[in-house]
Length: 278
Image (tube, rainbow, N blue to C red; front, side, top):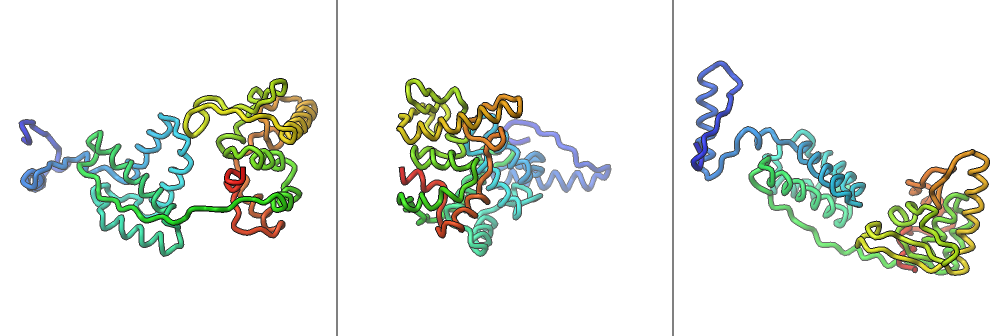
């Protein structure tokens, strides 16, 4: 009994000595002020990881992709580790190991935030009894990169035909490429009124946004519309995406981007620099 409630638990054995040993362990836990119980002992890192993935999918969090990457790094260290054994000391050892691989403090902090969220979710349903103290590292990685007009002009010719309109629109609007531009469909473009539109709930702050169709932007989108219509007639299919590869939504471009920067003679540039530029 603990705090007025009776607990029944199998020792998973036919030997009385095993049951007595289990009982003594539980009584020792109560003597230290907390009863762990079988649920807590059986909770593993994989259980915690599944909880946070379910939480992110259920709440349609846009950072699901980021937390999945964080879980991949965490899993390299904590796979099959009981949650009860993930202590502050182990977390500090994980931080040191990640730093040895050259990981930035900001990346490690994202992973630690995911780990902390996992423990809080597990604690709320009684799968763990404590959340270990998880440090946070100082960050000094403020990016200041942006594109001068001649630098962007050097980049553009080296982009393939599918990526040119996407990155050119990012350069003009400053909108986020994966979540705000690559997801645009033709109903989001009003050629008559002259607007490129993001619906409420599609942006990071959940607010809608509209961008005026400048002459340059209109020319890009009209060319893309003509190109898409030609592809639709040739393939006999409807293409809903404004920016696409052979009719399919663009989801990956990191290798193409790196190759383009190399050809243009620009280093340490990232697509997010277009946002700062705008």
